[in-house]
Image 1 (tube, one colour):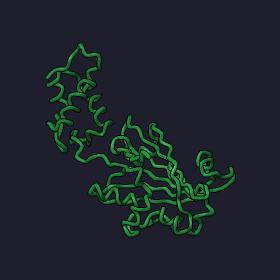
Image 2 (cartoon, rainbow, N blue to C red):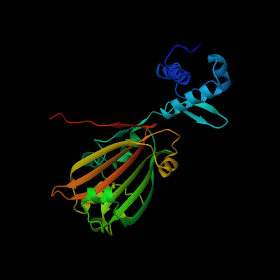
Image 3 (tube, one colour):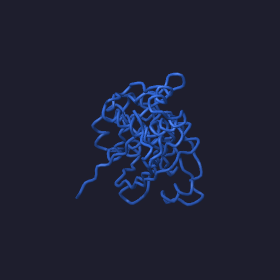
Image 4 (cartoon, one colour):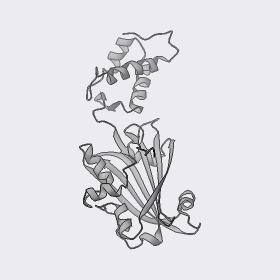
Length: 257
């Protein structure tokens, strides 16, 4: 097997494209081990650096995983589908009988076990959050921070910011899982979302995000900020989700009416 010197793409991109095709066509199946660097060097007559750059491309696309001493493998797990339309869905919560929030339901639908590592604190409202929540500069917010797992893999970060006055003393302030979900807890307090307003941006992760989510070099994240607005127009929560680009698909279903 050879690469084409006349191709305008660098050699490592050509190599990544060939291996990508083998993965997408099923020639390389989920869980299959890729040839070693030495084998690929001999097979394609390229340098080890070219091999490493190609592997970096495939890892960043979420197609392969690598571990020290074991080599590289076709990713055996499918990307998680983040169903933004159903996140916070009242209907889905009621279907679960208040026994699972929508995150837990989505992870379970992939055949995995959901869990969350949670911390809660009270802080001055960051300027962007305060602006979206309509708060004065000196007002404080309660922030509920989560590292969210499917089995043992961290798949997203979720930080919920609330005006302190509406959640103080509630279960939302406890650093423990709220089985029925914080959306339901908000409704129990009398704050019922009528509208969700989403802002979506793409960027590289911060060092803290990369550490918490085990993100490799050159992997971007999606940042989704969902503002919950009550019937009276009052913002009641700004939920900021960070999704690693190599293991999530962001999915929306929009009513054409």
